[in-house]
Each structure stands twice: as structure tokens, then as C-alpha cells.
Image 1: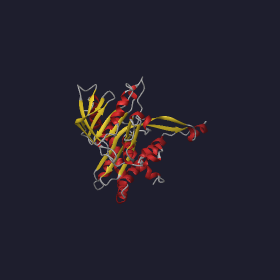
Image 2 (image 1 turned 60 degrees about the vertical axis):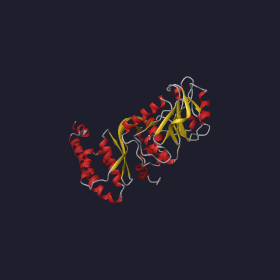
Image 3 (image 1 turned 90 degrees about the vertical axis):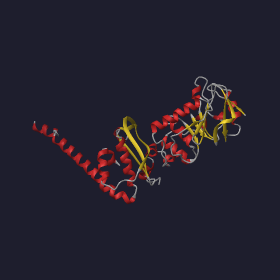
Image 4 (image 1 turned 180 degrees about the vertical axis):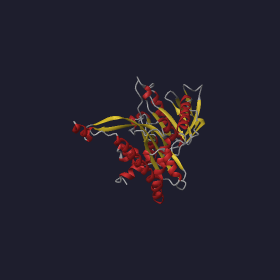
Length: 137
Length: 212
């Protein structure tokens, strides 16, 4: 689910095209956008406080066989929420689960990991070692 | 099932977030096909029904209805009830799960509710508002067997030119007497929306009912 939450609607749609066509689905609720209060705890064990609100879009779909799929994604992309809910429903079918994992989830996961690694490398190139500077004096 | 967090998450993420084990029952029935326009149409029908007491309104855009609710009552709930309106519901578990999923309304006892859908509720038990804020009076959504315009109850009051006749089948025994009793506390009071199949008719607290 976290992979789908980070993937854009276009990315998910592109991967889904590689699968046999998904059975028709119907929207039970949403996609609808609302606010969710994010709460935190100072130091992980302090008193909980409200950190701020974030925009969340949720969607629930039903496949023709009655399987339900839910998705909550950050932001306002209704299409992403609906596709993520559809993938959630498809993943519950044991016959489809493997194919969906291999064709949709794994490539998205790999792409996201690669993107993160590139960003980390670029950030690392500009890293300043304060420890080295103190030694130079 | 309840011991498996993944299964819980899949079935109703809201319930898990609220940490409410009773809510983990799910519904697989859709609400309005077009949530905005259908809710507006249903709201318009309710408004029309309340401004012309006793006139029967037909609802066209109906949701998938769980057992225990009529299509009209489900429509009224979808358009009037949300997370900020306290609701007293006695229509079975399937209806409760459906309302929780689509409306997210908090359930309360009859005496504290803004909207009541409970066949056993007495008009006198409902919150009638206060003299200063009579608009806080509850609205009773009453399921009846059939509604039509014709000989039956004789309605008079604001919104009716002279007299209007409404035929109601399956109203609770003693409803008309309870209504007359309820009207004595005006401006405090309770408004009623009658639902049967895809039809609604409303009885705002200003209307007077006579049998025959």
C-alpha cells in the first residue's frame, strides 16, 4: 500500500495496462478529499500533540465479484486513490496476487528506491564534514 | 479476523483509525451514484416536502439500499446526515454498517439525537429543542408501508392553502394523538419525514393532523 501511495496515477495506470484487463469496478465511496489531523509525540514517548493537518484522498471500490478495495493517499489526486483502491481489491484475489505484485508493485517499488537513492547521492555530494574542517585548523 | 491487523485494515480503514471494534463490520453497497448531484436532488425533494406539508415527493436517484432501510429513507440519510449530526438508528446491523460507512454519523440514544430513524421512538421522547433555539428540535424519519395523496389524514397549516389529504398506510398506532400532543409545545417540537419506497412526505411541526 505504501508503494501505491507514493506512486503517481500515471505510473500505476501504466503498470496496470500490462496486466490482463481488470474486471469492472464500481466506486462505493469517493474518491473524496478531506483533511486528516497528523499527531505526534515529542521524542516518541511524550504527550501527543497535533502537528498539523494534511490533505488526504480516499476511495473505496467494489469489483464485480464483491471484493472491496480501499485506499487512502496523501494529496488530492482522485485518480491515484481510485487506482490504488483497485489494485488493493485485485491483490486480495489469490489467483491474481502474484501477477499484480510482479507487474505493478515490484517495478514501482524498484523505481521509487532508485529515485530515493539518486536523491540521496546528490545530497551526499554536497555534504560538508564539519569534523574535517575542525581538524584543518 | 479481528486479530489480524492487515485484514482489519482492508475491511474498514476508518474503523481501525478510530480504534472502534464494533465498526469493523463492513458494507459492500454503494451510496449515491453521483454523490454531489444526487444528494442535491434528494435535498431539494426534502425541502419541497417540508415546505408543502403532506405533498408526496418522488426520489429518482436512489442508492443501493441495505436490508432494513427503504430507498427513500436511505436517500434522506445520505443527504442530511454526516459526521456532525447525531443519529439514532434502529434498523439492523446491515443498515448501521452502511450508514457508518457512507455518512460517518455518530450514533446516540434517541433522546440526544438530531435525526432519529427508530420505529419504536415516541414523539415525546425526542429532543424538541428549547424555547430560545427551537430549530434544534429533532427530525424523525418514519418508515411507513405506503404513502399517497388522497382520503386519509386531513392536514392544515402553513404551506397548505386550505386543506390537504394524505393517505398513510402503516403509521404507528396512536401517531395522530401523539402528534396533537406534541404540537402543544410549539415552537418547540419535532418534524417528521415519512418514507415509503421511493416516496417521501413531510410533516413539519406547524401542521395539524386530523383523522378522516
